[in-house]
Length: 55
Image 1 (cartoon, rainbow, N blue to C red):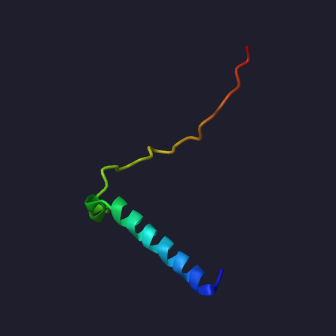
Image 2: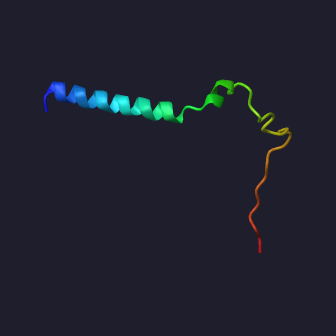
């Protein structure tokens, strides 16, 4: 393939990626700073301990 063919293929892939990204973009993503999830982790006062079953 020549360089011009490679550039043409790359341009087609870029355009397809732009279309994909534009399709997946949601209008709600602009308010991404206001998350509904707050305080995802509780207090880490103790380390969790795992024990094997002895029986």
